[in-house]
Amino acid sequence: MIPHMNHLSVPFGDLGRQYRCIQAEIDAAVERVLRSGWYILGAEVAAFEQEFAACCGVAYGVGVASGTDALYLALVALGIGPGDEVITVANAGMYQAAAIIQTGACPVFVDIVPEVHTIDPRAVEAAITPRTRAVLPVHLYGRMADMPAVMAVASRAGLAVVEDAAQAHGAWAFDHDGNRRQAGAWGTCGCWSFYPSKNLGALGDGGAVVTDDAALAERLRRLRQYGWGSKYIVTEAGGRNSRLDEMQAAILRVKLGHLEAWNAARRERAAWYGALLAGLPLELPSDTPGHVYHLYVVASDRRDALRSHLTTQGIGTDIHYPLPAHLQPAYAAVPMRPTGAGSLPHTERQTRRILSLPMYPELTRSEVEQVAMAVQEGNKAAEEQG
Image (cartoon, rainbow, N blue to C red; front, side):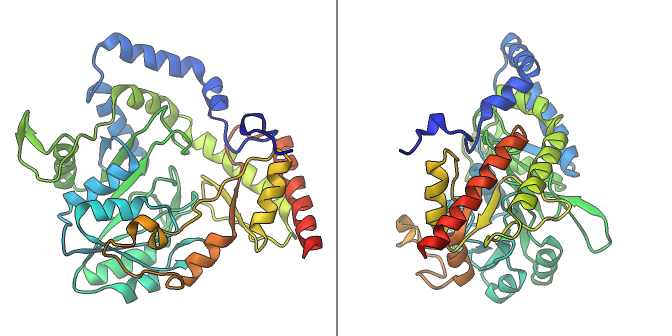
């Protein structure tokens, strides 16, 4: 009998645990907003924008309604539109393609470095044409893309770099000089989601764009509110209603203070998994100092059988993501390249193999051991079945 999702012995995620850990702080922030009588684009949003930008190591933050809106508005603010091309990956959901298509530009997908699931800088360079305007690397599963190499390619070609950092709150990498630089601080701008399950998650939707470019930040502030230069006067085309609300900003301000500790807890749980799963016929995520493990993603040639076994054992899993963007049925008639199965071999192979195991700061040692034991049993069963 397959356990009902609400009765899994180890759920894939449990947002209630985090809330209970900081309930008093969250409740106080919510009450503060309710008592203020101001709920849209007020003091909480302004304070969070400043605090989050500082956390990212940049000057400006602009709160918006979602991570996908952050990508779209960043592209529009950079003047990207019909006839332009934006290079990105196809293995990180359809969010990047959706944002690019909404601007009227053409997504150009390149393959990944399979061991780390992030954009291959060599493939970026090979895909550049006279129409290319930007590169959109994705920091996937909590690991940053190879930003020194991506930035070098973009600099040589004169391209903007829009970082999709939606899964990388608090992640960092070393630059060529050996200095730590946070996700979102490398490119022209960094785009963030605060979907509840993120390392820094709201209790609803939310997003932000961070940048060191003052003019870009001001344009983004206009675009997030219909393109208004002043109230009811539209001075920027391409704007929409995309505002981070006061309630979510206040909650995010509380959670921001816990982000470093939560990321340390994620890294600890990743180390537990690594030790317990070592030696199995699985591809495990390799560790780097700035990896914050938004997800713990393994790869197996027997992925589907393994997942089925874990489900029968009450272990929650997911696949991030089951179908690459260049193979999504709704995009078949949309101008993009490449298209069709076989065009991105590393992306397509890893899509067939990846499996996300439970990963969140509140996961207990005994739960990680339970997951690992079920994975061991599932691998053995799959091998016996051939």
